[in-house]
Image (cartoon, rainbow, N blue to C red):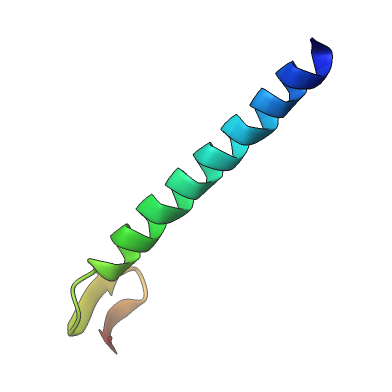
Length: 49
């Protein structure tokens, strides 16, 4: 019984990792492209993406 519980844990952890990486990749791909303008303590910065 202990081996099967460990196997289920490993499979579950791998599923969670795959879902997390998929969500991260989708989030990164949906970032808007163009120019980013930031105003902060150090002044204005413009970054082209």
